[in-house]
Image (cartoon, rainbow, N blue to C red):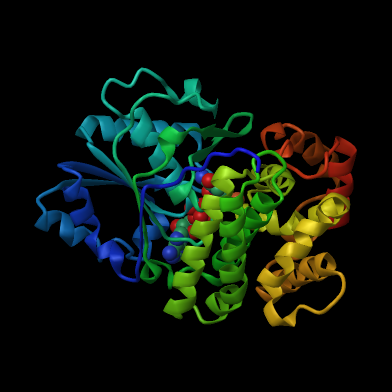
Length: 383
Ligand SMILES: NC(=O)c1ccc[n+]([C@@H]2O[C@H](COP(=O)([O-])OP(=O)(O)OC[C@H]3O[C@@H](n4cnc5c(N)ncnc54)[C@H](O)[C@@H]3O)[C@@H](O)[C@H]2O)c1
Ligand SMILES: [Fe+2]
């Protein structure tokens, strides 16, 4: 067996309603001054209502930074860090989708007392190696898995950059389906497909594929493919919502240890250039990347086919049925199917392909090597 290592968030709570005890979890960690990092949409949907009273009861000073925007920019991370320092925060909570949780991770690191590194010093892999403040994550989308990954993605002047370091792995993640019942259909669909892509790309990851990630990826795909359509059509269905949160979390654990590849590499330039949600960018190139990879990953895709098809899997070409089922799901959840339907212009495709080549951190994990001409052909096929 090939040697591997695996790490994840130390403590998980998976229970509908569990976020109401957030303040108690902060108190149990000795916190007196907590900064909760979130976005305006979370406040608008009153998602903090069940959470805030506990902080008064526990006599914890709580401040809320609610200016996170999708695909957080450097300035935003620095502003949230300044607020944490000014209040003397001793614990950070990320509360929201991947954008809020990614921001919270960086704030917990950068606002740690005596921190000598700034944001510019920690881009890349294992550059952040100092201490951080205690960190609790409460996801409100079932998608990124950021609550269990050592990764934070920041939008810089030149594109998207990642900070990858085990120092960013949170201490506790609370998966509470009640927070996700108001998630709009298109966000449920896009973030759910993002999570499925995490599982698929972890399972075929060329560099760090390992038996634990494999197990997690298969169960994640089973949960996500079984419950995605229900979560979109019947948003109040708590069972489907809790299964989606768990599926996204398992997929996050899988790809945190067996990293994602070409689907994400080709999705990032779409997100940056056309401001498409991260999950939608992934969905738009998924089938074409899988078709491109088929010659090198046929057996692995065939192994995943039972996870998404269950008893509907027919004898014969499992890999082809796997790709077809993902295409069916994409159409069934009412997301745009082609790049042109999502506002992407044909003239932009060569520049997108050039930009995707910058994502070598991800492309090295792909089962098949991707050259710029290949990326362009994939975008053209997806157009
Ligand atoms: N750290 C990682 O490992 C990792 C992995 C994948 C993606 N990402 C990053 O995560 C970000 C995307 O995160 P995301 O897809 O979760 O979306 P997001 O955090 O950008 O949120 C999208 C929108 O959904 C709204 N929303 C969130 N939860 C809601 C709820 N329960 N009810 C109503 N509205 C709600 C938010 O207010 C926001 O307007 C990107 O920046 C991406 O680069 C990080
Ligand atoms: Fe993703």
